[in-house]
Image (cartoon, rainbow over the protein chains, first blue to last red):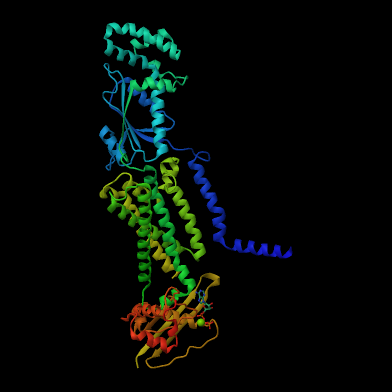
Length: 443
Length: 134
Ligand SMILES: Nc1ncnc2c1ncn2[C@@H]1O[C@H](COP(=O)(O)OP(=O)(O)OP(=O)(O)O)[C@@H](O)[C@H]1O
Ligand SMILES: [Mg+2]
């Protein structure tokens, strides 16, 4: 028993002397639980409102009313203006809205066009442009818009129906229809018959703005309303993508694996030191920069081959289209690998031992992967986390892969901001690593 | 006689603050061509550190060291130097002949696996049977 106690004590001392192990054991779970908690509700700060573009070209009162309803939605944030590079704010037109959805600035645009509703209208006509870059987000937006429209519209429903009848039967017969429809509505929805006839003749805006307590969005209602409310939806991005799920995620995996593999390559300097081969190398007529540059080059080649294998698997098993934009894909893989190895070099230059390098890099890679969008789409995060996400290398790489695989972006639009930022990170990190290597004489 | 090794006011400190070790403290030394020089001293005197500075394995804190009239930071001078570090290892992923080829090439020799020179040097150290072993 005494031996067990002494051996137990030895393990305890061993563990607590290894700061790296202590950090990995307690810090990583703590940090990750905060990130997970913030994403999936609870904790501090709830999920941010999803921004969607609202273009109101109609000018009729009902349109203004619906827009104001969307404005006050608790899950959507309506965007109506656009600030260009010169800081000039303009209202977003339908064309601009399509462009902004296409390039990934916003996930969706709701347009209330000129023919939204007029005296001759028999239905409300919406146009809806969207980019299902994130399945959950996409469904949330559509659901919210439909709910807003469908729960507020019953008040103007009778008017629409009457209009339809008039265009069908001519106005003389419409009067009889009016009473018939009032009968029908009062029996079906339990509305007051006189009220219905009144509202069929005049559209009263004050009535619309009253709070509607009874939520009448049942599926039965939806069938009738679908004929009166026309959603002209158009998926602007990824419509021809065969496997959206994998296509959207594969870039996230790519950068996470790059980070793990290439940080390992960088910290192999410690292994070479332990093996005793590093000393042997440095007696040779080679310079430190040649040594580092060769390692850098090797890491990039290794990373590119790793991604090649990953993408080939995605292609053969999941039909992810890697070939139609292959040049851009290879380029982004190269830029991401450069940034990843530079990150690894900083960790290596900063750490004092292999164990420390492994612990620090594991901590940072897991946090960056969670925050930067490797595991879940960043658009699901609360606003404050979406801002923090932009400070991770992972975010820019994930977004760049999305641009290539999901949006099929051209080379020039990739350069700014994605490639610029990733290369900027790579260069800055390399300088920092070189500075630390020199100052701390790690090698 | 020309000076092959010229060391002036060379110091090398390890660490900082109270735990700082002054491995070399203001060393001045010159060694001329054709001399055989023995460096003696007790454990921890700084012999290895001095050699490491000359080979560019560690960097001096103060002072200068020159070999063949060139500062030791110029790695090209190492082409003319043979050195066997303490506790070093050859990479265990290379065979005997590969080690010879690899390090010869790093030193600037034109050599390949079929060079007669390889068996010559292996014979010299009686290690021919390790030629194909990692
Ligand atoms: N990398 C290092 N970090 C910290 N201190 C070091 C380092 N290398 C050497 N020292 C210290 O510098 C001093 C000189 O060491 P050095 O190895 O040069 O001595 P030496 O004369 O070669 O000794 P020995 O006869 O044991 O080989 C010693 O006090 C040693 O502990
Ligand atoms: Mg020694």
